[in-house]
Image (tube, rainbow, N blue to C red; front, top):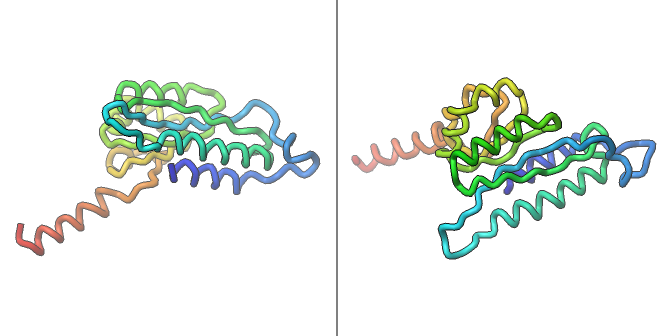
Length: 173
């Protein structure tokens, strides 16, 4: 959720309001698409509210950016893709986003397992596209070969592993 909002805020900061027209009419032309990858769950007896929060808060930010003139004078449109925690669906969702001619960015992908499947299967397509992809994957070696892929998470490789090693050494495990 924070990843999406941060990215939208960044896009909004970069979007300058149109000078000659009203803000409400400033964003014109075919909308740029920002593809948002979410993962709903049906295997638990409660709803954490993550997906609903992402949809609600990102819509607020989309509206704010569009009122200010969009991005380069064009509105943005959020397109949600739910992989339902399935790697094959995640691959299909990213492939769909890559195929869109108006795709401006991709945001999401929260699992190292699904991330691995996506990058191993269509990593070359992601790389060739040059489309910025802000993931939520903490295993950097899954996407380190892709200069257009970023993460909002601390690196498991460079942050967690050294701490665990020091801990186990300290307690002689």
